Length: 345
Ligand SMILES: NC(=O)c1ccc[n+]([C@@H]2O[C@H](COP(=O)([O-])OP(=O)(O)OC[C@H]3O[C@@H](n4cnc5c(N)ncnc54)[C@H](OP(=O)(O)O)[C@@H]3O)[C@@H](O)[C@H]2O)c1
Image 1 (cartoon, helix red, strand yellow):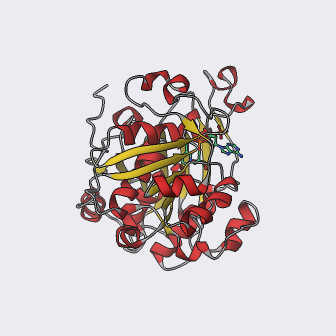
Image 2 (cartoon, protein in one colour):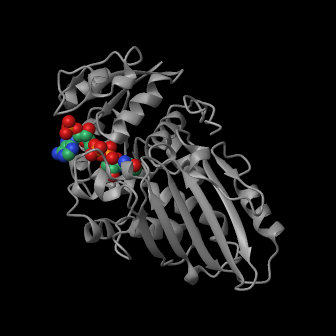
Image 3 (cartoon, protein in one colour):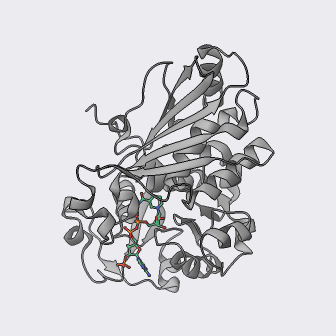
């Protein structure tokens, strides 16, 4: 059994980590931290965990955490994470960070969209934790920058097309919708029930911080600079994310060409399900799971490819992917703890 700690366990991503790790066959959750709930049993904060998780939250202390656990998940806000992660690495822990602090290779891009980086040298050694494209690097890494939810739902459908000259890389438009848990558990007017329920709105149009993350990874895959247009939306549901991507086709390609490209790219990848042409993904089909379902349609009149992906923002978009990364780093089966059957409805 590997020993695991979750820092920031009472946030939405942290609580989802606790849920997944509680059912993991090869990992034992030994320590969870929180400032606000230090000393409280986890099931007092999340009563659904009664009889399942028997741990109390404690205050973070780098020595205690690294003496107790081999793998540490940091589910903290960006900026807070970069203050905690270097101390854990120095003490020999392997770290999977869910914030944006270790996702970028170029510190200048991080600093342009976030804030000054306190440990820019760690960006060189950190690995972008998208297992479907970085498996071998993740196996050897001690620090994972776990991808953002919007980038996961955008990069996975686009990755098979970044090198094959099937689409015009200068024509990519990404339109995403996220459930409200994507904004975290902290109280805020924008996710207040009356502000979200029965409404549907775009936000941070052409200005969302996940844009440079997507562009850095897509550019690396393409071997050239890729600029995208990205519009996120908030939908009145608690979890789930649907992303629709439009790109001009470079030629008169058939459905079979697009389908074969997706299927061959993901043939050995347990968490990507490619749907047959004309079938549309639904967030309900991946709720609570680590799957990313990808569907597509060719708009023949406009000669444009439309890709649609769905993930659960808290699972493949955050904590499930983080556990997938831990499995790979620890030499465990990639699917360990992540193979629960989806809800049929
Ligand atoms: N929600 C998602 O769908 C999602 C998806 C992908 C990535 N992420 C990333 O995962 C990380 C956690 O996100 P979340 O949605 O779980 O956020 P959240 O619900 O707001 O939780 C934040 C957690 O960090 C702890 N914390 C410690 N120091 C803090 C500080 N100085 N300020 C605020 N909180 C502090 C909080 O607990 P205490 O206050 O008790 O210490 C809490 O447990 C973020 O970096 C986020 O970008 C989230």
